[in-house]
Amino acid sequence: MASLSPARAVGALAFTGVAGLAYSRLETQLFTLRRWSVPVLPAGSRPVRVLQLSDIHFVPGQRRKTAWIRGLADLDPDLVVNTGDNLSHLDAIPGALDAMGPLLDLPGAFVMGSNDYFAPTWKNPARYLTDRYAQAPPNRTRLPTEELREGMTSAGWADLDNARAQVRVGDLTLDLVGVDDPHIERDDYPSVAGEARPGTDLLVGVAHAPYQRVLDAMHTDRAALVIAGHTHGGQLRAPGYGALVTNCDLDRRRARGLSRWWPGAADLQDTDAPADASWLHVSAGLGASRFAPVRFACRPEASLLTLIPREETRA
Image 1: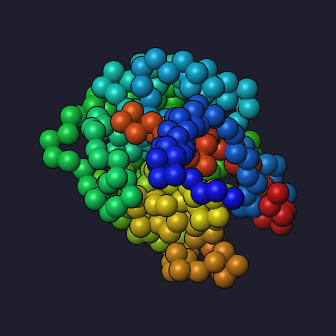
Image 2: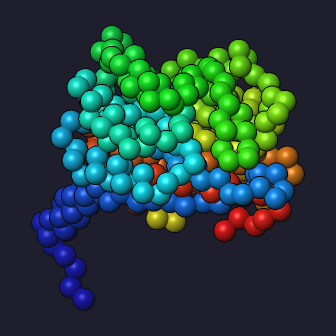
């Protein structure tokens, strides 16, 4: 078989690159719902359906994203948990709240992410694959965070930024404990630390970025489930390899989806998990920075976590 000439080889590589870039931009619109069953409830409890939203990174004019998020209300979840990074534009708050509109009528709770505090800035895309990507540039533009917070709390959602709250779901009382974004070192878990309070059936931890210091502390307090976002599932995933990065100290294998967590878990497999290991769910999120609107092998997602009794097997 004749080999390609150098000119044709360069042309083929260029075509592949352009096609890959075009698909990676298209994939940002391929919203999907992930479903997981998590065995954490007391024996005999009825299932509890928790809808997680994360990393919406809303930009004004995103009508397709708005319609898809609003449609999630048809799932009729018992609880909505928003794990932050709702914004990607100075003027995004009205649109983000509109997208969540029907969900705000349901019981809910939230924590903030760095992109709820600071407007995104352009970065060299190559930095995404390095530790330097996590370093916030100086003098970032502040967002009207309190307007976003007011929009959610006025609807009755619990603010879990370094705070605790109780939510009644059917016959169960959930104890929720959360931290402000660990990615920009706003977390203060010691101020809210403690095991599930008397009269509650389950302790659930919530954080935007799943840094190990927070996961370890929540596990120590016997959180049965920890819910987080931030990683975008890696945003760029290589078939057979998975996430290239997590942009925090979480290991790549846990960049998205359901896994187990206990101190030292990053170097071990879930099959090594002790009986008291926490369940950890990390959402790949629904968006991306408006300066890097690409995804590859990592579709944008929301997650429906069905909490079931511990004696049942995860589906």
